Each structure stands twice: as C-alpha cells, then as structure tokens.
Length: 80
Image 1 (cartoon, rainbow, N blue to C red):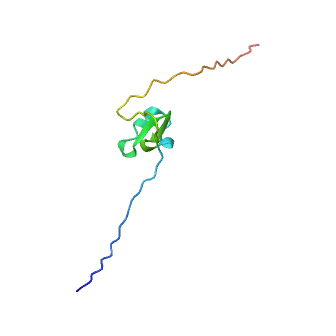
Image 2: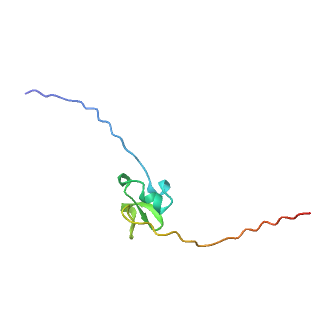
Image 3: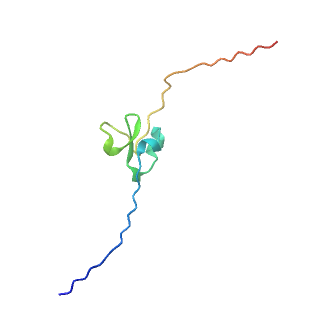
C-alpha cells in the first residue's frame, strides 16, 4: 500500500458589504446589482434576508418622492 499526501494551497476571495451604507435612496438601492441581493424595505436599503416586511426588488418601481415640509428663507437687503 502506498500513501500519497497532496498539499493544496487554496485561496478564497470574500467581499464583505452592507446594503444601507451603499445606497441611501430607493433608486440607488435597486440599481446596486443582483450580486448584492439588496432590496428597499422600511425606507432603507437592506439585505433581502434581513427584511421582515414587504420589499421592492430591482424589478419594481420606487415610489414617488414626497415633499414633507417646506421652509421659506427670506434675506433682507438694506439699501442706503
């Protein structure tokens, strides 16, 4: 009986990411790419596995933005 030992060098490449810091809007989130599995959920970009409610995928359309408040800024100029 002959015992042959083979030593293999295996190299792994791992990409670590979080969806939320990569996209702050629905449109940015849904265009990140399928390789990230990011979805728009609860007004945030999240990994699909971390979303407990309904979510939007790249096949969906983001909701229209809403104007929640308006601030009026007046600048007075005095002319002498």
